[in-house]
Image (tube, rainbow, N blue to C red; front, top):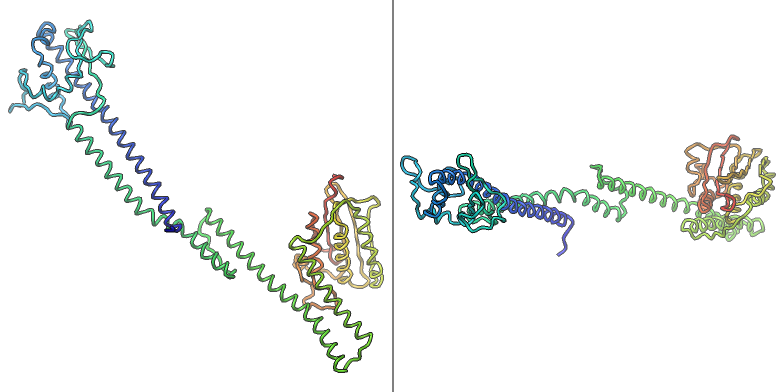
Amino acid sequence: MKLNVTHRVFLAILAANAIIVLCMFLIMQWSMDRGFLKYVDQLEQNRMERLATKLGRAYGESGGWTFIQQSPDIISQLIGDTVVEGSTPFTSSPPANEAGQEHSNQPEPSPTRRFHRLERRILLLDAGRKPLFGTSNPADIELFNPITDKGMVIGYLGLHPSKFISDIHQLRFVKEQKLIFALVALLMLLVAVTISLPLARLLVRPLKKLAAATGHLSSGRYDVRVPVDSDDEFGHLSRDFNALALSLDNNEQARRQFVADISHELRTPLAILGGEIEAIQDGIQDLSLESIGSLQVEVFRLNRLVDDLYQLALSDVGALAYRKYDVNLTDILNEAIDRVRSKLTERSLTLKATLPQDPVIVFADPERLAQLFDNLLNNSLKYTDSGGKLDIALEAAHAGVTVDIKDSEPGVTEKERGELFDRLYRVEGSRNRSSGGAGLGLAICRNIVAAHEGAIEAFQSPLGGVWIRITLPVSEGLR
């Protein structure tokens, strides 16, 4: 039989309470036995003090200890007299006469029989500590009560300590108390059973809410949220669950947007290709080098889009190949600038490059860095107005290498700068294809920089456009 969490918590609470109740019951039983025995010993010691007083009085009346040998039952009678004087609910007292007076000093058999256990534990010594009555070993008795007559010590009275309770009335009292303890323990256990199940349900309630919400989340309902009712572990878990659900919801929205954007990017060149091919087939357009060139341009756009998607997918899963070694970042950046010089001239863009003469060594993949700089420079070419400016600077420091690429107008808003590195994001809302790519270049750049343990950020350029800053760590050998 499988138990759910509520029953397991219930059994755990119940088991803990049962162990506590059992321990309390055992401790109370032990304390009762030990404490009551001490109490009885104390009562008996009090009786020994009274008995010592009576023995001293009998000694004075008899003029010595001869009365012990002449009347052995005198000890039983005197013991009975101590009970009359200090009667307790745990011992029986000899009956009194109608006037309430004690019995005469004549010994009776019933007190002897009644107190024979106490008699066997009494040890009476004379002034020289020689035994007069009793067979106990003096070494076993810790406390002796001195017996005096006219201010002089005439003997000693000791009582051998009892190791267990033997009186029937005392045993009955102890038994009744233990029964009460057992009933109290049973009552406490019943109370624990009564409150454990509601308490277990109360404790498991947040967990059930999380389990139900997790079920909705696994079925694709990313809008589910769990109420946060506390600041304990369940509260923190609920907040983390809500954050996870929000993240999954955002990722799902991004996935849908990504599919929609890819569909849009693929539909347009395919529609152009289909339209031109259909026009050629219908004879509306002649099959010429010009028409073939137009078809080739669309095929090139499709090929570039597919290649960018492939590169981005490899980068996302960490499968993009990186062959890192110490390279001169200055040479890689110079080569990337040389590849776009002609295009800069065509668009009348003024280039200012501030590069150090000394080598700047970084541990990186030169091909991926070349791809990084090509994407960034081509992005500036596409989105910078003709006649504008492009400022490139490379600075090396002990903490790292910084590459700054600043272009002139048009600029972007702060919100748009925060989304520049998102895949398929382009600033223009109309997604005008005349500006070029599908918005994957900067996303690929971010992944390449991250693979080199660097950082890439976008700021407002002092030239009016966008300022891209790349920070890369220097080679370990130069730190």
